[in-house]
Image (cartoon, rainbow, N blue to C red; front, side, top):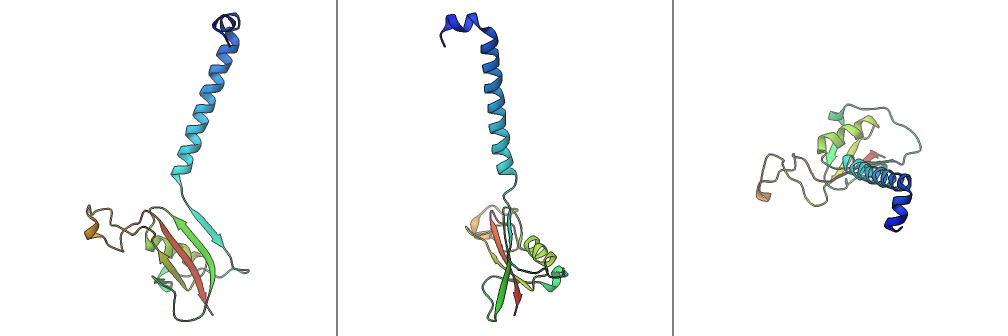
Length: 132
């Protein structure tokens, strides 16, 4: 649109500016909402299991040596193994296999050489299982 046309239709220019501001605000809101939570939970079992006390749920760092069935997967950011264990307990899992892609770190430590599996992780995945 030319300057002369914009002068002839100031309401059109104001409307365009309002739409542009609204779209920019919506884009920022969507981007922030996407960053606020990064959680994915998938339940695979065909039945539900009674919840357990988290202390009854084993935390494993590799597959167990006995037969099992996967009942759910959890993925999130900034969770701890204990938090994933609690999620597994709520759905009645016997154990949860924890994987921390990209490593793990303790938020109170600055250097990688001081990492601790008990600390938090940038990303954590847990597979909730029931023993057969």
